Image 1 (cartoon, rainbow, N blue to C red):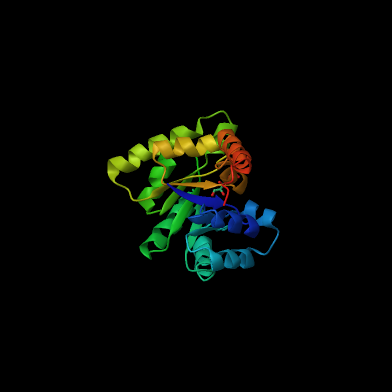
Image 2: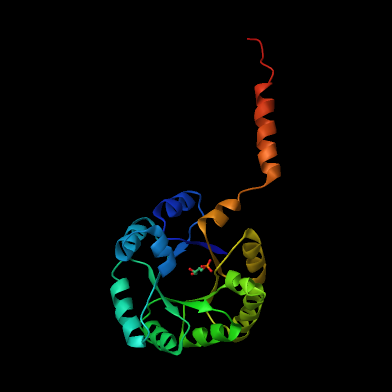
Length: 217
Ligand code: E4P
C-alpha cells in the first residue's frame, strides 16, 4: 500500500518524507488555506522535494474551466495529478485528460457507483472519503470493499485512494480491503509508529545498558 500525505504544510511533508512515509501528496482548497501561502507557490515548493504524484484540485464548474486549470497546474511540477470533483462536468474533463495521458484523481467520492463512473471515464485515482461518511452515520469502509470488488471484476486499473482518513484503524482496514493508497494527515501518519511496548522496551534496554558490567583490562 502506498502512503500519500494529505497536507500542504511544507514542514509536515518534509518530516514525513524523512521517515519514509511519503509516496505522494494530496492537497485540496481547505489544506491550501490552512497552509496559509499562495496556491501555486506551495505546490511548486512541494514538487521541488517530492518525486511522487501531487494532487492539485481544480475549482471550475464546467469541464472547460477544469481543463484550463489543469493545463496551468501541469506546469507547476513534474508529477502533478489533476484532482477533479465527482460531477458530470468533472467526468467530461477526466475523459479528456485521460486521453492525453494526464493523471487524474476524482475526489468527493461517496459511493462505489461514483467510483465505477470515474473508472469508466479513465481516472487514475478515485478518492472515497471514509471519515466524512462515518461522520454522518454510514460505514465509510464498506465503499472500499465494494469498489475493490467492482474494479477487480472488470480489471479497472484505476487506483483506490482511501481519503478522509481520521485514525490508524482506517488505514489498517483499508489495507486489508485492498485499497491501493491511503492519503493520511500528518498527525495520523506519525501515530503509526506508536506502541507502548516499543516505548517500554526502549526504556528498559537503555536502563540495562547503563548497568553493563565492564571488563578489567
Ligand atoms: C483527500 O484528498 C482529501 O483532501 C481529504 O482526505 C479530505 O479529508 P477530510 O474529510 O478530513 O477533510
